[in-house]
Amino acid sequence: MTKFSLPGIPGELEWKNTPLDWQVEHGNNLTIVAGEHTDWFIDPAGNYVKDNAPGALFAPPDASFLLSARVTVDFASTFDAGVLQLRGRDDLWAKLCFEYSPQGQPMIVSVVTRGVSDDCNSVPIEGQEIYLRIARSIPTIAFHYSRDGRYWHLVRYFTLGKLDNLRVGFSSQSPTGQKCRAVFSEISYRPGTLKDNRNGE
Image (tube, rainbow, N blue to C red; front, side, top):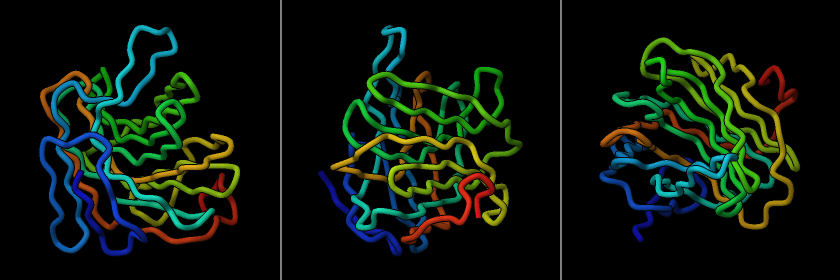
């Protein structure tokens, strides 16, 4: 599987599931095109299990870190999304999504999976781009979103417990559609923690 690097990301990225298309442009802009019926989700009712969405993942060298990006999505079908992802193993992971809702509205959505997925729709967003961020400080993880990349709002605060093989990165998905193009720009990684996970500073 192809490995590649991005400026500012401390490690090679490797694909978990092959995208329909991908490219790196203008320094560190990463485009991921997910193919049809691609998703990462384990339905708690047991009716639906998918683990075929393409993700470009790397192993963070720091126990505590912040990973953020401006995410732009060409929404076409329900649940199309651009995603920031953490993955410990196939049944232990979490994702922060900029996703197209069944109501035809872009939204912030978070999914935490510990055996089965806990899915939560959060805030409707106008437009096709938003900033997403993961803040990890052992043993906790915080998801945030921002409209301007400066003032951050808490989406979810949780733990996945002990993670021996953590990988993080970027993903696109199209669970009900033919494809979904997501562009990740202004990508930033830095070691360290926030002063306050709840206000995002």
